[in-house]
Length: 421
Ligand code: ADP
Image (cartoon, rainbow, N blue to C red; front, side, top):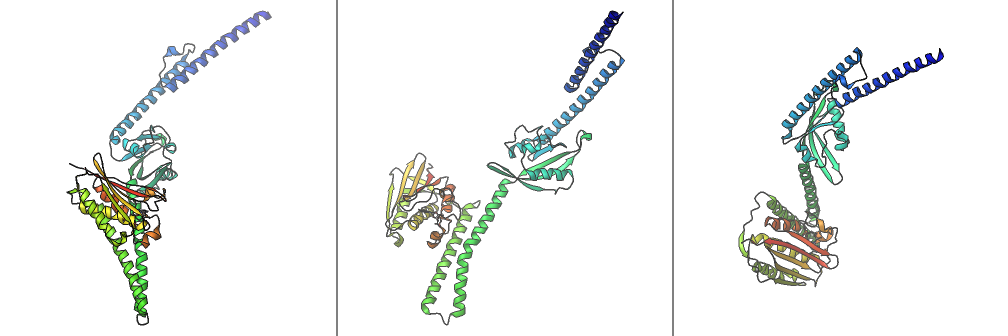
């Protein structure tokens, strides 16, 4: 009796285990079908028979069909959006309710060239700006200002962006709304604004010193002209004259710079024999009292012919470089002006064996108002604009300008002028 019951039990257990194993297999296939969004055939679930399994299979297929339809609708609409927004000049970015990037057009890639393949990524991982994320939140809560400026700082690159954000209904209403941003790259304007502010601050600073000196002396003369000794009066007037000259030079240099930077800088080109022009300038400097204590040498390659330049402007370039060489080198220094032919350019070099310029100053030397030694430049009547004028004139002629210098050994300023036939 017992052995029979045992066999029967083992048989029942065996059948149950097979059924259970079949059901687990069927469930696994269902699971896989849902995830891969591939509808099932009834034959795909061989071990699972019965009405319940049939219904489950049908319902799963219905679900998969619906998900596929929604997915197609969504990608279709996104593709349509992408086609519409892709060619816009304005950068466009759309994120979903969880900040996943759904759309980023070509113009956006141009603003953020490092943000490649960003579709499907989280915004936080692509654009690193807390301010931007706060703005996204504010747009979602309807609390954002219509336009907002944000600075994106990456290792060696700062980008200023003006952006407008708005919520738009998502293609899947149940999952919250999306946010659309239109971005403008305003980095150039911001940089220009910064340069303008710096320039205004510099000019004000440069004007303030001579003006306050003049004002002080004039007030002293007005208040005490009866008591002031004749010698003091003369000294005061000479100081006023010196500072007025300084103001005058500053305004003249500023006017020159502004003309050179304008749309029409008014260059008058003509064919000029460069060697003759430069020789004339050097001779003129040799006879100046300020150059009496310097040795001024001139050398030119004979093959240099005529060049198409504005002779007055090139005279100003050489004049500024020679003035500097005379101003910043001690008595007895040797100055050289050399002209050489370099393929399609004439290279002009103004060299001295004076104190030289420290390496850290060299990259800034052609910037407006940049001086190595402020006190010395002012004492010598410098405006800090001479080399900036040199750079502008040379560039307007299509040439290059640069400096080589070693402290204690001297400086060599070079510029080129293209030889145009
Ligand atoms: P500045 O009116 O002060 O001379 P520049 O733009 O002509 O202005 O020159 C800028 C600065 O470059 C000067 O203040 C000076 O410190 C430096 N510099 C120019 N030329 C020389 C030179 N030949 N030797 C040494 N320093 C020079």
